Image (tube, rainbow, N blue to C red; front, side, top):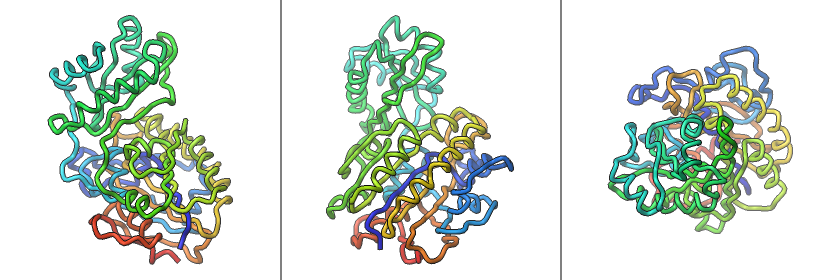
Length: 385
């Protein structure tokens, strides 16, 4: 039906507590519902697409909308994106709420030649504020984690140049991806500035283990384009990616997406918009979260107007991060599903999906690809008219 599919992940824009939210301590979480718990918002484009109707507000006027339930066993970026592409891991990656084992830290120091400071659960902005000066004086790398299965490495660009930091993280990844530690991601977190004014830079890089067979592989193996924007390339370890481009922020990501509407690719353009999560969700900034949503809404007409008749657009999320909820971690939520094409003659609500993998299944179905190996996901292509 469609020559080009644009998949846009609004990172952490959850649509209400999942059925198993109690297992994660997240009963009552509703990122989108709580962000929009005000009359002071202006989201005309998302209103038309159905995002507001999902949380019981204004009715959609075109496209299809609904929600998808998580089937994965975590509430993080990696598992959320994996599930969209048909991968649901039997065992979740390990988390380290008390910091990493001393044996692991010792091995990291040996392979990198760097001392380690931190080794705790922390906010990325707070830990560089706390340990940035010590790092600059000693050259030790700052290592920290969160509620997710992630090991983050922060370093000032004037002390450890970015390429060296990437090399350090690659060495660390070879250790932590082993079964004994089973950490999902290593993230390089460069920062700049002076004491009291440290800021993280856009040169973040994620290191992940190569994922199992997924819907991106099916697209790639059938000769279709797989364009990865933002951190998508890192999430999937550059596997089955034809073009991978980093983005500085949400608007840079959307502008790059608009650039690809001018091209003649045949396949998938897959974008992650991370500002919702990293800048506002984790920092529990409800007003900033809404501002971020409104900013994206203002740019959306440019993108929508560039689309062709044979384009399909899917908006979704990978988990929640309710800025009104306790703590600073992701929240276990369903995710929104918005589907639009100029070709549609109808609009309305889609049935609730029991897995994010319905997205990947629909995309490969659109391109006529037979799937006999990936068991998760049910196409909703035949509902789009």
